Length: 472
Image (cartoon, rainbow, N blue to C red; front, side, top):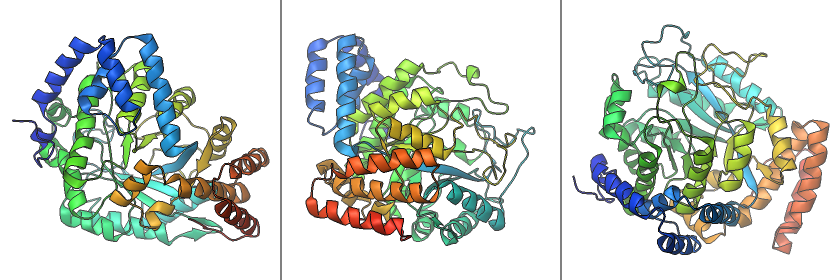
């Protein structure tokens, strides 16, 4: 197979020979300071790097250059996303699954875990519980099971989620993380009004992929890897990718991940809307030590920084798999979206006590959404509950052109302040509200245009009087 980013064949746009040649090149040049300086100079243009250039940075061992990388990643993050952090929560609909994935407790042979599928009434209870926290954006998750979780069930759940208006609560964006499917089914998801379609590759190493997915439809590497092209063909122009770090050598995964982003640009003219960086974590019958490619915290931070430098426009996501300390480090280096108050069990939000029996993974950051919001603000970030781009049609190439030019901040910064104000009025504790009000007043002064500043102040007053859902 010949490497070809414009190909629609998985083994040509994620090409094993090209990745191995890249890793060989990296080993030869990881301490080539002249080359590293050239790559960093190119990165400062904020147009991104290719997989080979970024892989050299990832392998660099010079502390001074690593510090330079981190500072550059931080600056690029600020230039594209400001100090905003988008908030979301996962919603697990069903843990029925026909696959045999060796790293996931939902695998078919696991008899320890009780199987559960939410009814539409239970979905409603979960959504109300999430709305009562203050969430506006969800990522729905479900195992792959054509009988228990057909596309019609997913569509019914999306319809239910969007239909629920509880007090001042509303879920304004539903992102979907379900198994690879057909163009026809992706069209149905598009028509249902989803935000981003998310599908993690797990691993780009084909041999490892087939070993880790011994049974079930997910065993088909090509069908899974080519799924995003089918989604885009169906009109879903915001897609999110990621690998599960720890399943395979991280340098291989890193190169494959960036090659996938390059493929989107080459074929569709638009890169991934988001990139996620989960690591293998303990869950029920899954032990992370069973996988011998686990990633150190130090290298994990370096990967986040290098992805931010290589794909400056993309949203980067981290979940509650990671603890507070790690999340604080990687937010500075490139992460722009985090979950808060998450429960990874089916039906977990409606329960007063966090249930553990149907969790997909152990939660390392179990703080409430209010606590996470408070923490972010104390660090100088604006927790954003904004969903305006999706609802204003700023998706796909339209979003990317605004993001790459930096113009998106003209919308996102004021929208973040207005949605934070909603949270403070409706859901925050008194201490969080006090910190938030001070932050909003400070950040209004950072709005560049006087006319926009005036409009934001007027809308903030209207929010105080009970009006909701303003957006630019």
